[in-house]
Length: 124
Length: 361
Image (cartoon, rainbow over all chains, first blue to last red; front, side, top):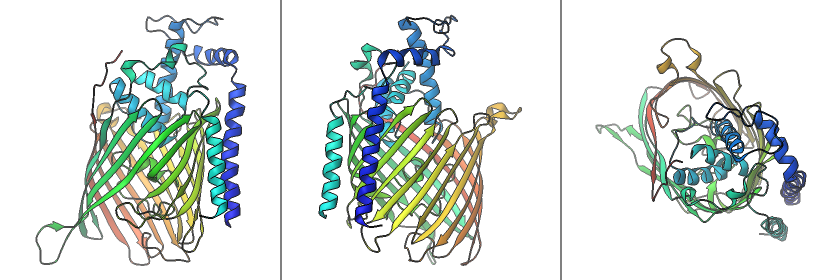
């Protein structure tokens, strides 16, 4: 393969990642995303008190139900992402975890949303 | 550097700069408005982490003691920057004729020393010395506290260079294409460096992977073009699968180059499902690895000189999440002669915060 082909491959990779990113961002209208994500997580969300605020189809999720859904989603993503390479670690203090998760974002290419949800789960 | 590569770098810089204007959490679908301001309690603090290990192996009757220490310094700056560096100190001590005890020179290596800029949810720009993203073992599975078997895969040197690292610039990132698929990628250029301990080769390459969270399956491929010597191409592929029904990890890689080719497959099973000695069993993991290496058209200093096959099986016991004892046995078959390989060791991962750590909410 000559230099031109390599150049074309690198450019194609950059362009395709940008197109994908742009397409994804356009697709993620905040209202539709919030409602679809709420439906996705509501089935599993259970509050600490035993109530299931996110389980019922609610047009306006409360901050508490969002909190519970995010915690469950964070744990799921923690096990899925961290467990791919190593034994999931115990929880660390919040500011330590914030650094470790940034390191993992670079090292393991975890997504921005995974980073945010895992950090939330690990620090609460 | 010829004009085509200048053009590639310029194009990449334009693409990158156009995306800098987006907020970093732009794509977070369930982000709450208050998340945009990072609370004081979650501001990242510099940390010193790493691992230490004491590994002993007996290969073909020759004992070898292998202490290793790897220190990682992580310095976050603001919301988007990270300085990270890892230095390794290891000794390969063997018995020398006429001298009592074990002896060997201390090897020092700067594994990586890089500056990362998280430009947006899709792109991180890295400059400096970084682990070569060819396959997954070098970047993600190499530390002694992570790896399931303490010996390196035979094909590890393919694509990773003389010191497993590159010196130059890299664009990388991971983002969800849709709820069922996450895409990750890395594109890099490395310059030639002959200065020890920061030596590297002149290469350009890329790696891309797809992760299916529901199936816990990751597949990906790597490509590298050497811009020196024979200017050949190298190819690789990797798979990680964690079946939902079993506490089983399956990892595999294949690599192909003019200097050699091969593959390895490594299943690891945690004994949590056994109905007895539950406390001990959940800490115990059995591991196996099957690998083959085939010599290529060109010689290599880092790869085995002859075609080799190896089968290994072992046991890991996790005292804590960062402290593990390991023991394994392997049998190597090659034209140079067959050999038994016994390995025993203890590995430990540590973490020291270098500042105020905040409190759990």
